[in-house]
Every structure is written in structure tokens, then in C-alpha cells.
Length: 315
Image (cartoon, rainbow, N blue to C red; front, side, top):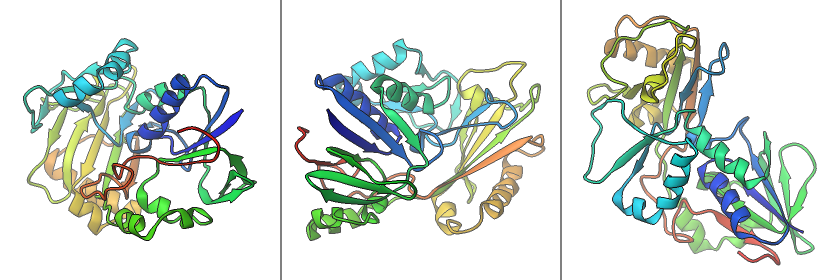
């Protein structure tokens, strides 16, 4: 039985796992490793420590389907809509730029439910807190070492982490990347930002006419969302949640500052935008060091494409 490892339990890793399972008829052992404590990657959903049903999307806020991708990937959208994983975005988002033919969707159970849907379909064994450190070739197998625990061997490895994390890996993998490829990979750049989730007690009211708002006049805050309202989930038993995304310049400037200091700065600026907000019962501040790719090198077709290594296994 072929053994396949996918590194990264985000959108790329989860969908790759599901597609491998769909298109492979032979027996297959499929594992997904992620260094985080849960799946989602940059499509993560945080829960309130006081009520796991009170959630906040700290990464992607909604899915935009352009006419090009609607035609190319229609079966994926149809499937997610049929399972109730996606739903058309109907709540008002102020400042959203809409182009002709675009459709926007939200995930009622949180944006990470898309990842969980594909991981469940794949039947993969998913392991968290598994940080890959080395990849070596041993007897025609790929031996993968992680920060803790014994190395394991696989026939095929798919790396879906951000490019800088791939370049940090040690072992034989460093010999597989040519100088030209390395230069292209090093040319890939990422924007950085912070996201802050605020969780409130049931019954708390945040009285604004919108579910989300793009901010253009604040040096710190770029987007604010009443997250449960954005997803059309309002319940007397579940408190609201608020999500704040910072601007990229703010994220870059304060990238190496403590989470506590950054959170305090965001709160100060939030008071200017939404004065008199109630006190949250819990907060979650997320640093996105590798948020989006404004500049991509060209390698394996695209900088976001998974990097595959195989021995004796068809790709």
C-alpha cells in the first residue's frame, strides 16, 4: 500500500487529500500533518473558550467566485452548497468591491468547515502539532522528521506550506531545489497582518447596520465584521463575535511585537471606529506572517502550487 503524506491542513492540503482519495483506486494510506493545533490554515475559525458555538473567522471572511472560476470549478461550488457548507452571502458588507458576474459565499459553520469537509471526505489520518523539520531519501522512501517523535517514511510527500517554510527544511530536500528554482521561490513575497476576534456574552447587542465594513481611513484597521451576522447566525443562546483585520502596513510594522501589545493598539483604534463597544468576555489575536501573495515566483506553474516529491508512485 502506497503511503502519502500531505504537509499542511489548510485549503490546499485538505482538497488535495480529498482529490487523491477520489481519483486513486488502489489502496492508499493518506496522512495529513500540520504544525498548528487545528485544521484551517489561513481559513481558520476560532471558538470562544466560554461557548464553542460562538465562533469567529480569523482568516478568509467569505469566498468570491468569479465567472472564470464559476465555469472552471462549478462542481466544487455545487457540492459545497448541496452539503450546506457554503451559503450565498446575503448580509450587507459596506465598501465591498463587486465586479460583474461575481458571487460571494459564506460558511455558516465557520470558514474552516470547508477544510474539515474535505478532510473528512479524504479519510486521511490527521495529526496536529506535527512540525516537519527534515526530509531525507532513505532506501527509495522519503523519511520525514518532525520536531518531536520518530521519523516516518512515505512514498509521496505533498508540501502545501508557505514557501519560506519549505526553504527552511533541512535534509536531502535542499539538493532537489536547483539554484534557479531557489531564486524563484525566494522571490515569492507575502503580506502580513493581524486578525483579532472578540467574543461576547449571549444577549449582547452590537447595533450597526452592516455585517461587515471595509475601512479606508484608519492606519491600523482594514476590515471589521460582526461575524455571526455575516453568516446569518443569530441566537439568544450564542453571543455575537467581532472580527478585526489590520492593514498590511500595520502588520509589517508590528510583526515582531508581542501579541499583547498589538492587541492593545488594535483596541485603541477600534474605539475610534466603534466607540462604546461592550467588553468582550474573551479575545483571540492571530498573527498572519504569511497572509497573501502579492508577488509570486513561477515554479511548478504557480507559487501556491503544492510541491510534490514521489518515489515509485504516480503523480
